[in-house]
Picture 1: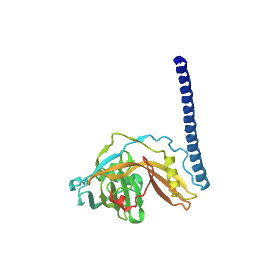
Picture 2 (picture 1 turned 30 degrees about the vertical axis):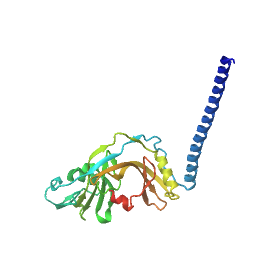
Picture 3 (picture 1 turned 90 degrees about the vertical axis):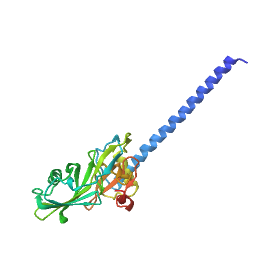
Length: 270
Protein backbone atom coordinates (compact mmCIF):
# COMPACT_ATOMS: atom_id res chain seq x y z
CA UNK A 1 0.00 0.00 0.00
CA UNK A 2 1.26 3.46 -0.91
CA UNK A 3 1.02 5.14 2.56
CA UNK A 4 2.18 8.47 1.20
CA UNK A 5 -0.66 8.52 -1.31
CA UNK A 6 -3.18 7.31 1.29
CA UNK A 7 -2.05 10.02 3.70
CA UNK A 8 -2.56 12.65 1.01
CA UNK A 9 -6.05 11.33 0.29
CA UNK A 10 -6.97 11.53 4.01
CA UNK A 11 -5.67 15.09 4.21
CA UNK A 12 -7.72 16.10 1.17
CA UNK A 13 -10.86 14.38 2.51
CA UNK A 14 -10.55 16.03 5.96
CA UNK A 15 -9.89 19.40 4.35
CA UNK A 16 -13.06 19.08 2.28
CA UNK A 17 -14.98 17.99 5.40
CA UNK A 18 -13.69 21.00 7.35
CA UNK A 19 -14.70 23.34 4.55
CA UNK A 20 -18.14 21.74 4.43
CA UNK A 21 -18.65 22.04 8.20
CA UNK A 22 -17.42 25.65 8.21
CA UNK A 23 -19.84 26.46 5.38
CA UNK A 24 -22.70 24.98 7.41
CA UNK A 25 -21.63 27.09 10.39
CA UNK A 26 -21.59 30.28 8.31
CA UNK A 27 -25.01 29.53 6.86
CA UNK A 28 -26.41 28.86 10.34
CA UNK A 29 -24.86 32.05 11.72
CA UNK A 30 -26.18 34.13 8.84
CA UNK A 31 -29.68 32.69 9.26
CA UNK A 32 -29.58 33.56 12.99
CA UNK A 33 -28.46 37.10 12.20
CA UNK A 34 -31.19 37.50 9.60
CA UNK A 35 -33.77 36.12 12.03
CA UNK A 36 -32.69 38.66 14.67
CA UNK A 37 -32.94 41.53 12.22
CA UNK A 38 -36.30 40.35 10.96
CA UNK A 39 -37.58 39.97 14.51
CA UNK A 40 -36.52 43.50 15.46
CA UNK A 41 -37.95 44.84 12.20
CA UNK A 42 -41.21 43.03 12.89
CA UNK A 43 -41.44 44.59 16.35
CA UNK A 44 -40.76 48.04 14.86
CA UNK A 45 -43.53 47.50 12.32
CA UNK A 46 -45.97 46.44 15.03
CA UNK A 47 -45.06 49.43 17.22
CA UNK A 48 -45.60 51.72 14.26
CA UNK A 49 -48.89 49.99 13.47
CA UNK A 50 -50.09 50.62 17.03
CA UNK A 51 -48.79 54.21 16.78
CA UNK A 52 -46.38 53.76 19.69
CA UNK A 53 -43.41 56.09 19.34
CA UNK A 54 -40.10 56.27 21.20
CA UNK A 55 -37.03 58.59 21.19
CA UNK A 56 -34.66 58.30 18.25
CA UNK A 57 -31.53 58.70 20.39
CA UNK A 58 -31.75 55.54 22.51
CA UNK A 59 -28.40 54.01 23.43
CA UNK A 60 -27.56 50.93 21.39
CA UNK A 61 -24.73 49.77 23.68
CA UNK A 62 -25.33 51.03 27.24
CA UNK A 63 -22.31 49.17 28.61
CA UNK A 64 -22.00 47.51 32.02
CA UNK A 65 -23.36 48.25 35.49
CA UNK A 66 -22.73 46.48 38.81
CA UNK A 67 -25.15 45.09 41.30
CA UNK A 68 -24.87 47.20 44.48
CA UNK A 69 -25.58 46.30 48.08
CA UNK A 70 -26.55 48.68 50.87
CA UNK A 71 -27.43 48.56 54.57
CA UNK A 72 -30.48 50.19 56.10
CA UNK A 73 -29.31 52.87 58.49
CA UNK A 74 -30.24 52.59 62.15
CA UNK A 75 -31.13 56.17 63.11
CA UNK A 76 -30.65 58.05 66.37
CA UNK A 77 -32.03 61.45 67.35
CA UNK A 78 -28.54 62.87 66.84
CA UNK A 79 -28.93 62.32 63.08
CA UNK A 80 -31.25 65.34 62.83
CA UNK A 81 -29.13 68.36 61.75
CA UNK A 82 -31.75 71.00 62.62
CA UNK A 83 -32.38 72.04 66.22
CA UNK A 84 -35.77 72.90 67.74
CA UNK A 85 -37.47 69.74 66.47
CA UNK A 86 -39.52 66.89 67.84
CA UNK A 87 -37.91 63.61 66.82
CA UNK A 88 -39.11 60.01 66.89
CA UNK A 89 -37.18 56.97 65.66
CA UNK A 90 -39.63 54.41 64.24
CA UNK A 91 -38.56 50.74 64.17
CA UNK A 92 -34.89 51.80 64.22
CA UNK A 93 -34.81 52.60 60.50
CA UNK A 94 -37.06 55.66 60.13
CA UNK A 95 -36.77 59.23 61.36
CA UNK A 96 -40.02 61.06 62.00
CA UNK A 97 -39.19 64.74 62.52
CA UNK A 98 -41.48 67.73 63.16
CA UNK A 99 -40.18 71.31 63.12
CA UNK A 100 -41.29 73.33 66.16
CA UNK A 101 -41.04 76.41 63.96
CA UNK A 102 -41.99 75.78 60.31
CA UNK A 103 -39.17 76.47 57.84
CA UNK A 104 -39.72 78.35 54.58
CA UNK A 105 -39.06 76.12 51.57
CA UNK A 106 -38.97 78.76 48.84
CA UNK A 107 -41.17 80.88 46.63
CA UNK A 108 -42.72 77.73 45.20
CA UNK A 109 -42.47 73.99 45.70
CA UNK A 110 -40.47 73.07 42.59
CA UNK A 111 -37.64 70.60 42.06
CA UNK A 112 -34.86 73.09 42.74
CA UNK A 113 -36.30 74.53 45.95
CA UNK A 114 -37.38 71.18 47.37
CA UNK A 115 -34.06 69.44 46.72
CA UNK A 116 -32.19 72.47 48.10
CA UNK A 117 -34.30 72.30 51.26
CA UNK A 118 -33.42 68.64 51.79
CA UNK A 119 -29.72 69.29 51.23
CA UNK A 120 -29.74 72.05 53.88
CA UNK A 121 -32.02 70.55 56.53
CA UNK A 122 -32.01 66.75 56.39
CA UNK A 123 -29.38 64.11 57.10
CA UNK A 124 -27.55 63.46 53.80
CA UNK A 125 -30.33 65.35 52.05
CA UNK A 126 -28.15 65.83 48.97
CA UNK A 127 -28.42 62.08 48.34
CA UNK A 128 -32.10 62.29 47.39
CA UNK A 129 -33.86 63.31 44.18
CA UNK A 130 -37.42 64.56 43.85
CA UNK A 131 -39.82 61.91 42.57
CA UNK A 132 -43.29 63.41 42.88
CA UNK A 133 -45.17 66.41 44.29
CA UNK A 134 -48.70 65.80 45.59
CA UNK A 135 -49.98 69.36 45.59
CA UNK A 136 -53.40 68.60 47.08
CA UNK A 137 -51.70 66.94 50.06
CA UNK A 138 -48.86 69.50 50.40
CA UNK A 139 -46.44 66.61 50.16
CA UNK A 140 -43.36 65.67 48.18
CA UNK A 141 -41.72 62.26 47.78
CA UNK A 142 -37.99 61.81 47.23
CA UNK A 143 -35.98 58.66 46.55
CA UNK A 144 -32.35 58.06 47.37
CA UNK A 145 -29.76 58.13 44.61
CA UNK A 146 -27.38 55.18 44.38
CA UNK A 147 -24.13 56.07 42.61
CA UNK A 148 -25.93 58.91 40.83
CA UNK A 149 -28.94 56.80 39.80
CA UNK A 150 -32.40 56.82 41.38
CA UNK A 151 -33.38 53.89 43.60
CA UNK A 152 -36.93 53.33 42.37
CA UNK A 153 -39.83 52.77 44.78
CA UNK A 154 -37.88 51.75 47.87
CA UNK A 155 -39.44 52.55 51.24
CA UNK A 156 -36.00 52.09 52.78
CA UNK A 157 -34.40 54.89 50.74
CA UNK A 158 -37.05 57.57 50.85
CA UNK A 159 -38.01 60.98 52.22
CA UNK A 160 -41.57 62.27 52.55
CA UNK A 161 -41.76 66.03 53.18
CA UNK A 162 -44.91 67.90 54.22
CA UNK A 163 -45.60 71.64 54.35
CA UNK A 164 -48.38 74.00 55.41
CA UNK A 165 -50.55 76.33 53.32
CA UNK A 166 -47.89 79.05 53.63
CA UNK A 167 -45.30 76.88 51.91
CA UNK A 168 -43.38 76.16 55.12
CA UNK A 169 -42.02 72.70 55.91
CA UNK A 170 -43.60 71.22 59.01
CA UNK A 171 -42.56 67.56 59.07
CA UNK A 172 -40.66 64.82 57.27
CA UNK A 173 -40.05 61.09 57.40
CA UNK A 174 -36.71 59.62 56.30
CA UNK A 175 -35.09 56.27 55.58
CA UNK A 176 -31.72 55.71 53.92
CA UNK A 177 -29.24 53.06 52.84
CA UNK A 178 -25.60 53.37 53.87
CA UNK A 179 -22.38 51.37 53.32
CA UNK A 180 -22.99 51.08 49.59
CA UNK A 181 -20.76 48.46 47.95
CA UNK A 182 -20.47 47.62 44.25
CA UNK A 183 -20.14 43.98 43.23
CA UNK A 184 -16.70 43.20 41.88
CA UNK A 185 -18.00 42.09 38.48
CA UNK A 186 -20.26 44.33 36.43
CA UNK A 187 -22.96 42.95 34.12
CA UNK A 188 -23.94 43.84 30.56
CA UNK A 189 -26.97 46.12 30.45
CA UNK A 190 -29.65 45.31 27.87
CA UNK A 191 -30.28 48.13 25.37
CA UNK A 192 -33.27 50.38 26.15
CA UNK A 193 -34.84 49.37 22.83
CA UNK A 194 -34.93 45.78 24.03
CA UNK A 195 -36.61 46.91 27.27
CA UNK A 196 -39.30 48.61 25.17
CA UNK A 197 -39.76 45.43 23.13
CA UNK A 198 -40.14 43.48 26.39
CA UNK A 199 -42.95 45.77 27.53
CA UNK A 200 -44.62 45.53 24.14
CA UNK A 201 -44.37 41.75 24.13
CA UNK A 202 -46.15 41.66 27.50
CA UNK A 203 -48.98 43.78 26.12
CA UNK A 204 -48.14 46.56 28.57
CA UNK A 205 -47.88 49.43 26.08
CA UNK A 206 -51.13 50.99 24.92
CA UNK A 207 -51.89 52.05 21.38
CA UNK A 208 -51.38 55.72 20.47
CA UNK A 209 -48.88 56.29 23.28
CA UNK A 210 -45.50 58.01 23.31
CA UNK A 211 -42.45 56.74 25.19
CA UNK A 212 -40.93 60.01 26.37
CA UNK A 213 -37.74 58.71 28.03
CA UNK A 214 -35.88 55.59 29.12
CA UNK A 215 -33.66 56.14 32.16
CA UNK A 216 -31.36 53.73 33.99
CA UNK A 217 -31.66 53.49 37.76
CA UNK A 218 -31.78 50.81 40.45
CA UNK A 219 -34.42 48.78 42.27
CA UNK A 220 -34.27 46.49 45.27
CA UNK A 221 -33.51 43.01 43.97
CA UNK A 222 -33.17 40.75 46.99
CA UNK A 223 -32.80 40.84 50.79
CA UNK A 224 -29.30 39.67 51.73
CA UNK A 225 -30.08 39.93 55.47
CA UNK A 226 -32.49 41.80 57.75
CA UNK A 227 -30.53 45.02 57.21
CA UNK A 228 -28.87 44.53 53.80
CA UNK A 229 -30.41 44.72 50.35
CA UNK A 230 -28.98 44.16 46.87
CA UNK A 231 -29.92 46.62 44.11
CA UNK A 232 -30.48 45.70 40.49
CA UNK A 233 -29.88 47.96 37.46
CA UNK A 234 -33.36 48.83 36.20
CA UNK A 235 -34.77 50.68 33.20
CA UNK A 236 -37.52 53.19 33.95
CA UNK A 237 -39.68 53.72 30.85
CA UNK A 238 -41.93 56.80 31.00
CA UNK A 239 -44.99 56.75 28.73
CA UNK A 240 -47.50 59.45 27.81
CA UNK A 241 -50.89 57.96 27.01
CA UNK A 242 -53.40 59.13 24.43
CA UNK A 243 -55.45 61.01 27.06
CA UNK A 244 -52.40 63.01 28.19
CA UNK A 245 -51.80 61.09 31.41
CA UNK A 246 -48.42 59.50 32.12
CA UNK A 247 -47.32 56.17 33.50
CA UNK A 248 -44.06 54.46 34.44
CA UNK A 249 -42.89 50.95 33.63
CA UNK A 250 -39.77 49.16 34.88
CA UNK A 251 -37.66 46.46 33.26
CA UNK A 252 -34.81 44.39 34.69
CA UNK A 253 -31.77 45.84 32.89
CA UNK A 254 -29.64 42.72 33.31
CA UNK A 255 -31.87 39.68 32.93
CA UNK A 256 -34.77 41.38 31.13
CA UNK A 257 -38.33 40.99 32.39
CA UNK A 258 -40.94 43.45 33.66
CA UNK A 259 -40.73 44.57 37.32
CA UNK A 260 -44.02 45.14 39.15
CA UNK A 261 -43.51 47.19 42.31
CA UNK A 262 -47.06 46.78 43.58
CA UNK A 263 -46.67 43.08 44.29
CA UNK A 264 -46.80 42.30 48.04
CA UNK A 265 -43.64 40.20 48.01
CA UNK A 266 -41.68 43.05 46.45
CA UNK A 267 -43.02 45.59 48.89
CA UNK A 268 -41.92 43.33 51.69
CA UNK A 269 -38.34 43.22 50.37
CA UNK A 270 -37.87 46.97 50.37
